Amino acid sequence: MARSTADQKPSTPRVATMVAGLLLAVLAAVGIWWFWPKSTRVPQTVALAKSLLDHGGKPDNQAIRQLVMSVDRMPRDDLFQLWRAVGEEWRRLRQEAIDRYFTAPAAEKPQLLDEEIERLKALRELMIALNPQADPDDPPRMPREGGRGRRGRGNDPNAKPPDEAARKAEADRRAVVERYEEALAAHAKSRRIVLPTFR
Image (cartoon, rainbow, N blue to C red; front, side, top):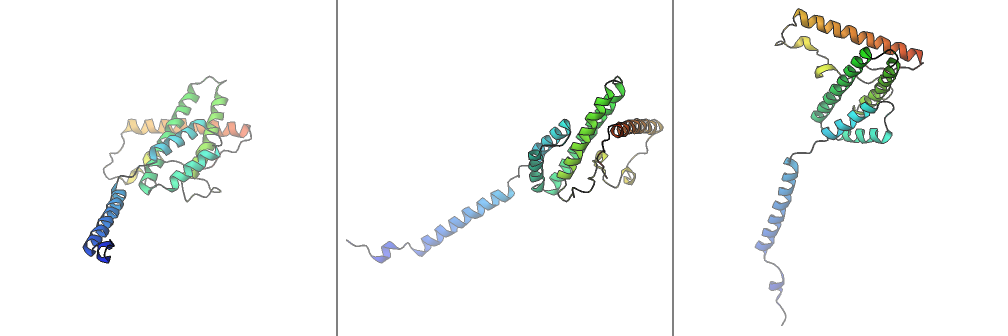
């Protein structure tokens, strides 16, 4: 027995209910995707950047490409977090290198300076890779202390003025860093190596 045409077509209210249900499912999926916490690439990117600094020298092109791809997809807040972490790691490694240099026997000092030169080369590549607007022909920005940016400490109205002991300790630290940088520059010059430049 043949069905009537009315039996073959779903009723209009049923079609409307199905379309509305489908539309709600799509909207729910979009809402979940939009509001779901995004996984951040900062920890993995920081780990990669730290390994590049630890190894020094010209970083592997594949690692740099991976870094650039991660940075290109990062939101601005994640980029600041990444720059801060890389800056802290750089300052930590730099301080360790300075401490090692001034406590090492004279015979080991040239090797320590060679390692620092290699680390500076890696830092230059790294800072270019971490800045999407960087021009590889221009000197990259050196990581700044404490994430202060250009404003410096002088603009904080709540900052307490450093006491005399803190000022003396900071002056002593700067003098040691200056002596280290002079030794590094002299060593690079004796080996005819041009040190990477930074802003």
